[in-house]
Image (tube, rainbow, N blue to C red; front, side):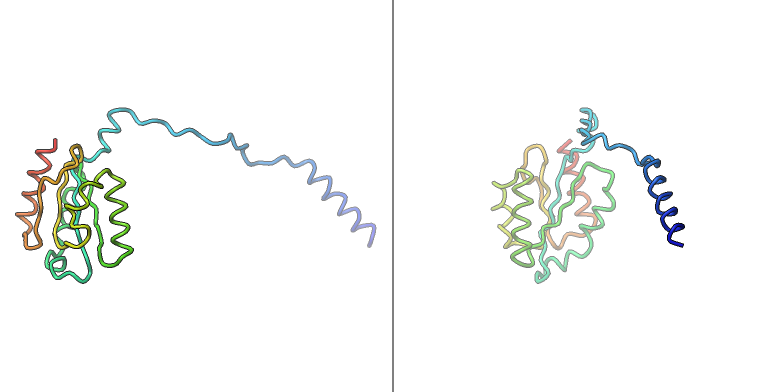
Length: 155
């Protein structure tokens, strides 16, 4: 019995030495390919739509789903839709970081520093200037027209 165990252990050891790994050898980190100029332009927004929102704000609630509907309707257009949630301190901090990261730190005061909610600001992506405001009581048609006019001007 002991001889059979030793023979089996010897065969397993020999088999382990004869097996080659079947996984590919890692070539190391890959360099990302640079997009062409056309690809960069295709992915760059012409307009940025910021919804200034807060859970506690009646104006935000009054807006309903206009912002979300605009996002669905203009999904294929060069518009970046951003929700800035000022419901609490964490949301205000994250909103401020986002605004600064896309080069709009100077416009932070125009955003009400998180104190004015219930509206949508349309920002020209090239100039970083607010080109239109959609108030909380704007209906679908008025919001759509404001976005289309701002997008046409930004192109």
